[in-house]
Every structure is written in structure tokens, then in C-alpha cells.
Image 1 (cartoon, rainbow, N blue to C red):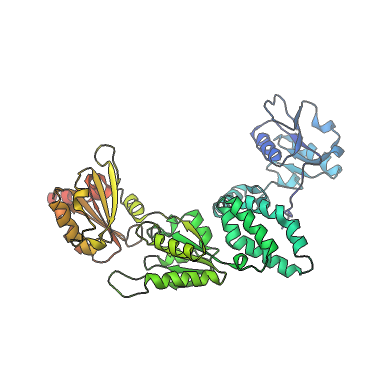
Image 2 (cartoon, rainbow, N blue to C red):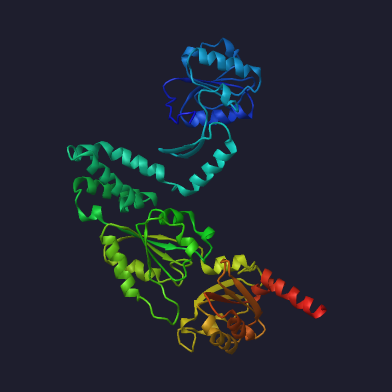
Length: 463
């Protein structure tokens, strides 16, 4: 490690900036974001902003002893002279793109207010540093700096309340703040709740409320791990225990924290498995033990995922719950198939239904979906495709309406079948195993999979 990472307070002195090009302007923005007072040696500079003194004097004749740091972006021999003057006065110097002349360098920065992450490669590869910064930035919650500021406001109060109880207990307290309901509330922007809970925890550090865990109802998306939301990934990497459904793929579970306990609670349709009441109890029991609990569901927890039932149960039990939405199966699978679920003139309505009650059950009124401008997406429909077909046709939907069966969408073993509504049961039989969706509507005929099927049919006829 050649350069020691440090955070320099620039508000107590003046920084010299040399150069008038784009590189100098970029460094000026960084210096201003740190609250620096800058003397900018540049010809013709305009709109420099506050705390910036533009000078047309020769920087080589400046009194370097008044600077707390010097940045040179002249891009010519002047850089060498400025670097030599700065070194002679023992002033930190950065020469843009010249680590050999620099005593400090600018890292790639992730700025979240009070939380700042700096990534450096010793000046060897700024592009690599930027790529690393982008990945880190995607993982950090947007409000993490605000959480740090909240903790800073209460730091002295916590230290006073817990004086004499040992550094270990103080560290444990702050870990519970960051990892528990207080931190979760802050990261969601619920500042009043977070401050009130933190104040209670300070006054009653052993209160069960301060020790309580939290449950995250997380949508895992349709199967592709790359479709996890950034928030879902953050929660998975913080989890103590994960209760996951049958539809959650191994690739998604691999994105979770390595030492998190993983508990399967899903079941295939028509097969025995743990009931919803038992799942609810497991979630509540884990939260009461102070754990950070993730309930991981395929798709979105509020789209036929029974997330609403779990949310209601846990809230009635007095347990903090956070919902993290996911990419719905319909959206993700349709996107991969190039299937626009709505079209301005042909498909102006979009409806999701579950086929669990498709066999003549009064809950499904098929006449509600007879309009040819409705795109109907049927969840859990592979085994009920004949009932879906019969119900829609009896309600007036044309037998020739384009239809598709999307199976294991976004996964490596995904399959797609297209045809007419009156053929949908045969298409579902070809799919055999799920999970799968049925899609009925004119929009299907505008999809990539429809065009591909038409091209294959034409090639077979031509052959």
C-alpha cells in the first residue's frame, strides 16, 4: 500500500488549484463538495461558485505556506514545478494523472453524506476504481449517511447514559441500533419513528422493544438472480435467517449472507408441505429472538404470494415488518419473451388472476375478462389451463385469441409456447412442469416468441 487512506478536513485552510481545463473543473467540484476554500489559478474561469477565488497570477510565485493542499491539473511542465514547490513547503500535492509527482491522490468516492467510501488503486487504474465504486454504490442504502448522522446526534447522550458499562456493551448497543428496527426505520426514511425508538432504547436499554428482531418480506423476482432489486440484495446480505419458498432459485440464495440460516418453507402445488399458519409462527418466533428475519418469496410478496396475510399476522403480533417488493413473475417473464403486456390500441387493460379456483368456482367471473382489449395473465395456471380456456370462450372470448404459456421464465431452463386460446390446454401439457404463467390477449401476437414461432412454421412449410 503506497498511499495511506485518510480523510482530510479542508475547511480550516485554503486549497490551491492550478489549471483551467476539464480536469481542473472536475477537481474543483470535489473540493467544493468537501467545503474547501479554493484559490483557482486559471485564465478565463467563469461561474466558479462560492468559496472560490479566481486568480490570474503565476502560481509558481504564490506563498505555498498558506495552503493546506495543492492540486495541479495544468497538463504541462507547470505541473512539475508546482509539485516541486509544494514538496519544498511540505504541502500535500496532487498532480492529476501523475501519481509519480503526487503525495496524495483522489480516490473514486461514494458520497452518502456522513458516510463516505473511498476506492483507490494507487493511481494505477482509475477506471477500475470507478467500476468498484459503482458496485459499492449499488450496495449501499441511499439513506445510510442519514442513519450515520442520526447516530452522531445521539452519540454523546448514549455515552453518558451508558457510562461505566464497558466499551463492549456500548458497541453491542450500537450494533442493535444499526441491525435492528431502528436502523430499518431510518433507512426507510421514517425519521420520527427511528428517533423515538432510539430515545426509548437509550432510556431503557434492556427493554424488549430494543432487543426485538425484524421481518423483511422480500420479493425474489421470477428466478434470475440478476433481477433482485438492490434493496433485496442488501437485506439478504444482512439476514440472520431466511425462510424461502420452493420457487426461489439456488442462485438467488447464493446472494445471501454466507452464515445466514436457510429454512425451506415452500411446497409445490398439490404436494404436502408446511402450512401458512406454521410459517407465520416461525417468522414471529425468530423475530422475538432478536433476529433479522427474511421471508423470501418468488416474484413479489404482494402478488399471489400471501405476503398480505403474513404482514397482517406479524403486525398484530407487535413485530416490525418491512416489505421489499420484487419484480413480478408476469413482468419479468413477459419482458424476457419480448411480450408487451399492454399496447396503446390493442391491449389497453391488464389483469392478473390466480387459477387456484378456476374449476367452476364462483370466485372467477369469466365475463369480466371477455373484452378483447384485456391482456389476462393467469398465475398457477398450468394445471387449470382447460378450465381457463372453457371459461373464457364461454364468456365470449374468441377461440382464436393469441395465447402463450411461459414456463420457468428468466431461468436458464425457461420455455415458451404460443398458439390460440382454444389450444392453451395442449400448450400447457407440452410445458409439463412449472412454475408457469398463462397469457391471453392480442398483445401475445406482438411478442418475440410469437414471431419466432411463425418463422419456424414458415421454414417447415418451405422445407
